Length: 474
Image (cartoon, rainbow, N blue to C red; front, side, top):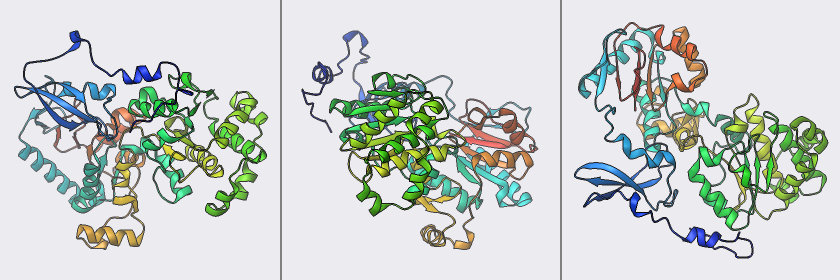
């Protein structure tokens, strides 16, 4: 979709720059005689940007972006370098196995690796119960694979302990979505960004952390949309914003409550929308009554006039959108931070319309879809709750099992680490995650994954060998 440029609002030269095309200089071409372009998708995260692999004599030597619905002929730095893994000399092409912790890893056949893994899973569950074995998935898995992670854990392993690394990502946003909307899902697609008149980005360094999304911001800006960035840092996106709110870290809720205070005080609430679609409005008004612009300025370290400016800009736009990411979510009050943004959108009637709404920017491309399809401890495919009897019956029927055989909700990835440390979980299968790097306390993770080691293990395609009793697949 190409948004026509309005010469009255587009910066000078925008049309020429955007329409110039991306033809590389001759000296950068990588032509190797006859080549085949193989259509595929980037494997780094669940966005699944379209690309072509450039293949010559059976070897991949480069790639080109593809005109896919999401990336539209653009790729981020990860995608641009994806092809280099294929023929890299360090790439593992076979499973590795060692019988004891002190042994070296050695290549084995897939049949032997699978036999060892299955044997040890059966042994652990026979000795300590089904829930003594856990499984962790990842947000960079494609949706079909996340579905299989959840189904495999619950149907094949019959363990309740399955979760994914989205716990370290956007689960605060998920909690806020559930509380506000009754469903764990963003309200708008990226395509709606192109239609908005005012875009608010909170706690996200989009240009570096989600480059594929940047083109949607520029598309909205080309139409003349105003941009508000709420971030302590002056990121590349913040430098281009109409308003950059450089608040103190951890004061996001105070800022957004003050913005809502101004919206109420100046009569900018969409009262018809609030009356028709919300509950608890009086309680929200009472909660933000004390957060005047002056008080927010003191708490957040920003000018009081900036609070008023943001409130007017967002509430008076015909269509406004707010998006946020880890910057406001990774706090002890992360859910409350997200709720304060949602309240602003609801109060101004900016939900349920193209170009008007609310969304969360995922840390990995399939951060949302990865849990919607069943690899989160309390969710079944389709965003269904594993604690809801109706949802349990639906999924059990589809899977061809008795509802009684479907495990109940398990614990979070964070809790599982401590359960491993205590010996409640004695075996772990990890797919597309790296707890040793991602979790905050390496020593706790290490103790939890080595303390109960006494048996052989197998691993495949991991650059760093995991502990003895942990299996890791990529």
